Length: 405
Image (tube, rainbow, N blue to C red; front, side):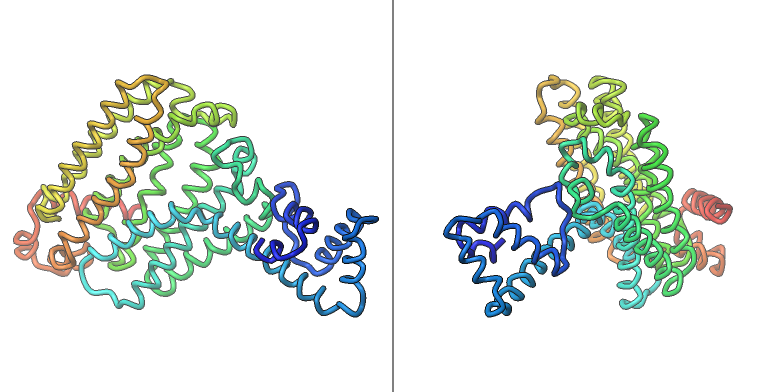
């Protein structure tokens, strides 16, 4: 657009429409650029701009024509690159990467920084792939919803075939990286998370049940477990608690968003809870899940997994979350601010919770808690000194269930 602004004013309009129209996919080939210029010439035929175009397209100005066409192609390439980046759902991906990073950092033992970076990149690729494949399948309903109508596939910036290919390559790359560079457990968990989000949630649950977000939240809650597994090669109680926190956080977060988008979801045929059960039932469920979330979020502190800093953050932020949920239940249907406040604060809540866990725990506290592999090699007396009896039982139970899966 910056290059177009340098051209004569009458030339700018047809060129701008070429880049802003959602009905025309982007073209980066030279032939497309030449045809575009000739189209502009025909539109200005008979006017003072016609002679300018004839001069521009003459052999004597071939160099200027090649330069302009290459600049136009570069701009369209940037538009497509931006489209592919949007398909990754960057904000959702960053949240998944952050929770995975916390799981990785609080895991016991020492992980080489280079391998840790590789693990984060692999998890990021997997999370991005899930977002791409979600947009690939949901392109039809994205087109009829105001919130998603400007996504790359509905706009025509990226085709569905390109999105499918991009998503599959990313998914395979992420799983392969974790499998070859780290361990099979982390790779298998990442593959399961991608499968669950794309097949179980996007293709099956999202359009068929009001519990889509509840069950589908399993995929979004797994990154912290994957991060832990990347560092240790197994699953234990600590990452399972983090899994529960994110799992219980997901429904109130997305239902708060859906309350202000009920008409859009209804038009798209997505049976979100506000669509099929109404506002009152949805706010009641939000309050229930918020209370459960606050209760579970206290476990790391109560069981000695985190310091008082984390406990204080969990209590204060949890109280605010419950208060916002109560206010939402008492608000009128016309009040959109109550749902929006809860939606925004829920993001802040999860970030503060995991940041406090990372800050208060450091690596020392968690390194004193042996992983399932180290626990098998440790003596019974060392286990008794390190973990309370109840934690040992729960931990071994979870490890067995993970092995059975």
